[in-house]
Length: 327
Image (cartoon, rainbow, N blue to C red):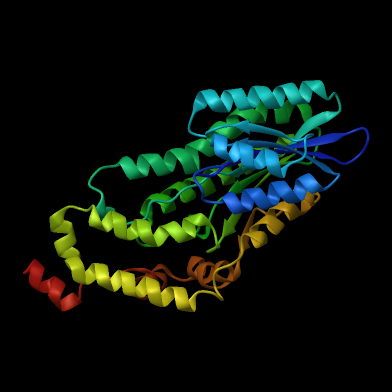
């Protein structure tokens, strides 16, 4: 489970900058913890941390000094998001020289598997609710305060993904949610520009987070839960064993590719401290993001699809065997 955190920065004796951050379901718990911890240790920042579970509330309270506030909030629960906004509103009213400086939308989850694995739309609704609508709820709740209190330099940081720029096979619900984040962010960036609010997107590649650990397990789990005829179409136990073997081989070869959460945290912190006119519309983060995924976003579709089929997709069965099934 991921937490949500709000961060308040203090740069001068006359002004305070409040930065609200959200997260969910373990996707970037290490991102959040590192960011909150780094900012909390700086004299420039006071943190208001929003945690999904009571356990994480306790953990964060132990991490952060007493001047920081930890609240429980689930981005899919409108009541809890409203209560979170009230708490931020109270903070702003308590401190006359405080204004809402930034919103960091870090909420996310993944539930991998090919589209055929799940005959219902439950997976899509759940992933969209966290990754996209959760982001909208938090922003909608806090944006009026930002508009009212911030004179200039405000910013909204939306956590996208390389999968928001390039759709990857076996991950379509996550792709769809992150493409929605990208489109919404682009529209919002233009809409809020007249109010001197900057909107940017962060596109991390693979990182050593819980989602990376769970992704492989959940892919196999979702294949096991697929209808029997779908499992047979993919090759049944042969396909399952093939996927497990690929995962095992990949773990040995991916250490140089998978990045550390600190890379994402450094990017987020950098954006928080940059002058607003220097903030870019999006940031690719990680070695794989800046090589494979960035290249795929620029290649002709036919070429990119060929790379995806050969590198990113778990082929169901040999083409000849598939043809026999279709004949």
